[in-house]
Image 1: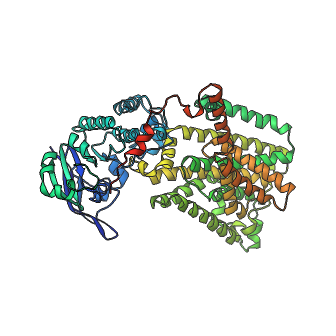
Image 2 (image 1 turned 120 degrees about the horizontal axis):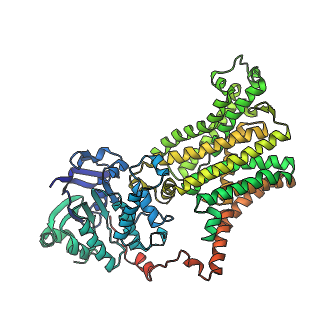
Image 3 (image 1 turned 30 degrees about the vertical axis):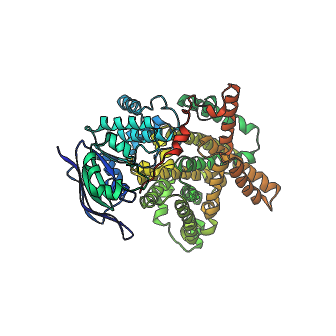
Length: 250
Length: 381
């Protein structure tokens, strides 16, 4: 197994306030990794860092063994296989589901190619992905009319159609019903292996059911890494996070 | 769905048919019903409609409000005027240059004596300028009102610059006394009618081009940019590049309009490219209906006709009417004339076919979906 992501001694600061501090994180190809931590731990900032949205003050960030994340523009990182789903679903209200994937699938093409038609293979791929996330029947509906959970799926579908290597999913099940959560969890398991997936999640029930390896963030540092069982038994983790009554059920 | 076919039909064939019919009516039928003066006015308004189509692509679809389209209209106009001026002078130095003390034609004026240079540059010039200006602006992630303010500043800067360069641009007066185009006197009714026909054809061609763009994946990308620029960036697109391309297309269309406008009026001046005309272009699109290409044309013609009528009837206060029209349409009909008509028709069709209007589209949202969308949104850092 090779390492797809290697972050070492990363420091990120906003206006002098340190958000990530000497953070190191290594992820193997094909892994399904959950990222948990109390509010303000730096989970979203870490995702922003990996997709190029924020730049570190110091430290090294290597993707796929060779790509220096800190030196590449956001869209180039996406083209090399880093896909990001945002915390609140980022979708295009006035486009329908099918059109979302049409936009997403052409991302490596030069501008003139965008005036041409899609090939039949690409069309098939779009329909496959729509089927995978359960939006095939609603393909021609405007995204603004979808429920919150469906919008989350639509955004995930936009990533999937691009066949990324590394998926960054920021709270993908927020706003989903129990049934939808289960379906998403199963989807994550099905995707892991072909893709590497990094998920942040607040819902402990969900993490417990679907997590393999968990990384706990606290105050911008990695507090601990291990299986959910190990993490739950760890005294410091319980102390800073699980034991707290900050709205997270134990 | 019926209304869709009428306004922005799904098929290219349908659009071609629509354009052919409209073109036939405008070129062969209309001229026999209106006076020479009105036909000339309409010719100018159809040239304006081309800028409106371009701005609609940029603003209605791409969400970028430019308050500087007049600049690119002016540049196209000046390129055409330089060609026509040299033709009118027939080898002698343009009058304003003589007055300003120049004794030979400046080097950058020289290529404009050829139509094959002047006419393409009237289109490509504004396009290239817009692309590079746009790329610098968009690369710095300038957007929204800041983009609008920058483009407005551009209108001020360029019109002031053109006024200041009297020996080269004719200063405040602009380039005047344009008398012929390809040897045809502009004063003749036949020449004007020919110009009118050409303007109608070019306008319809631009409409088809814009329609094709909005129907392509590039068009979807435009709408995507309007809805969520960040998502587009993290979908792997070079957002600055895409935006610059639209800006360039839009401004090239403004250049086309300028080149068609000048021979119809025989003059171009910095007043045509200043802030006020740039804002008027925005009014056309807003009144006609943002995001509907037909609306851009309807808006430019309606506002133009209203302006002409009101300025004749109420020479003192007509500008207030124009302002009122803008404010009124934005408040009462935010979708503009065509947008509101379309909504009304859709409502009517839905009513007649028995379905409730808010259910159109066929499928229904699952019960309780609105509850889940607001109920359990967890927050994080």
